[in-house]
Length: 176
Image (cartoon, rainbow, N blue to C red; front, side, top):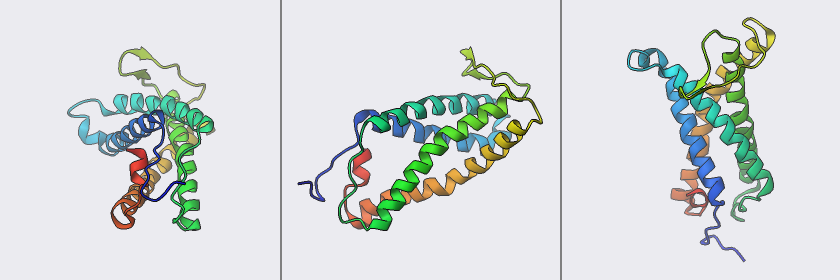
C-alpha cells in the first residue's frame, strides 16, 4: 500500500519532457511579450518560432508517452474536487501545448518571413494565406491561449508549492 510519505514518481521520460516543455514555454512567453525590446539585442521572433516548433514536437511525444504510461496516482487524502481540477488542468495543458505551437505555425505559414529551426533547416509552411479564416483564427487563438498560459502556469505551480509546503505531501516530488 502506498502511503503519503512514499514518492511514486513519473517516469524519467515524462519528467524530462515535462521540464523541457515547461521551460521552453516560459522562455517563449517571455520572448513573445518582450520581443519588441529584445529585437535591439537579437531577433527574438525567429527563436520564439523555433522553440514553438520544438514544443510542438516534444508535446506530441509527451502525449503519446502519456497515452501509453499511466501517471502515478494522486494522494488518497486529496479531496475529489482537487483531483478533478488537477486532471482537468493537465488535459487542458495537453491541449494547449499542441494547439498553441500549431496555431503559431499556421500563423507563421501565412506570413512572409521564413520559418526555420534555429537557422539549421527550413520548416515547411502550411497551406494558409494571409487574411484567410484559418490564419485569422490561428492568430487570435495563439495570442489568447498564449496569455492564458500565464494564470494557468501560476495555478499549476501554486498548487504544486501548496502541496509541498502547506500539505507536506509528495505531489511536487513526483515530477522532480
